[in-house]
Image 1 (cartoon, rainbow, N blue to C red):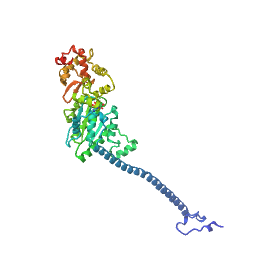
Image 2 (spheres, helix red, strand yellow):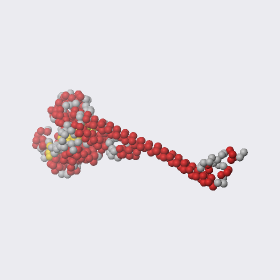
Image 3 (tube, rainbow, N blue to C red):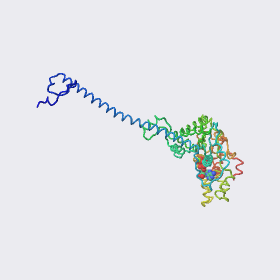
Image 4 (cartoon, rainbow, N blue to C red):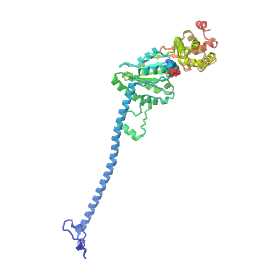
Length: 447
Ligand SMILES: Nc1ncnc2c1ncn2[C@@H]1O[C@H](COP(=O)(O)OP(=O)(O)OP(=O)(O)O)[C@@H](O)[C@H]1O
Ligand SMILES: [Mg+2]
């Protein structure tokens, strides 16, 4: 059977693509085969092209999807952070006072005064610096006042591990360190650093967050928020530039009435802060938290520690520094003899005088004696007189650092750092008497 009979060519212009023995000799047949191949190749390429396009489309849509999702997430997160910041400021951080009610000695006049400074006017343009000797009760008083005022007051403190300042600051604000940044930045950060870490120090990010909240607070209540920074003296030694920035920022924000800063520190930090141009916006003179008066000290001993008989004697030893009163009261309550307590106090004072190098045969003995003499005459002397008596800066820095004398920025004066130092000197008068032009007043009353 002939093949040509089985497959009948169709009489169409496309009939050339039908394989017949009859058209092998026909050149049109070969042209048709080539054309067919070209069309085939073209169709394959077209298919391939659309497949690639499809794949690219799928992969191209995914990041778009991710990006849009992330923008939405970033928006929600910013909104959430801002809302929680303003809530924290509205409520205030209300720090706890770590003293049992029956052990807390009331100091209503100072607390009222502090409450007043924690509620600034809408156009107040200065910040506060509050100082006082260690253990005079600054932290306790500010915690009480901050909690009582509540609204608008954020209390933060510089911890003993200064590096944790930012973390503590953030914690006080309930801040998740996911601060508001542009969406592109958020995305870049997310892509580059999956932990969302920023190169900015944590404390600075917390401060920025606080300022954002303070701005909203101001817009809502027409009052500046207040930030109380406790223990800033710790920054002076370990991270002074952080204190400088905090101080400069406090000035700028007082100018703009966004927030009012209250720095709580010792006198050393005041000296540093005073030397800077942003001191121009500090409330002057700085406020000082003083020791309890004799009457208050006796009241504290009798009411809080139930010590009546020896209260006066203990006051003579340590004066009105509440930390020291508490310590000697506890010693007495734990059945220590007053003589032993006295010895302990004298040893502590001796160690301070030793560190200040003003004991006999020590480097600053002569200068120290001149100052001691002046202080025995008048309790407090002007800082300039103190400098003159000490004759050089290194010496008086040593003495101030060692807590033998203390500087009072509110009055620009210097006194003995504590009653126990004075007590030691009185008890060891001979060691200082040879060169001191004895105060006749003192000589006649002290023995
Ligand atoms: N009003 C008070 N009633 C009872 N105890 C108090 C009172 N104020 C302070 N204290 C006690 O005295 C000690 C020192 O107080 P506080 O920490 O407030 O002093 P400070 O001036 O902040 O000291 P520092 O400069 O070292 O930070 C604490 O143990 C505290 O419990
Ligand atoms: Mg304190």
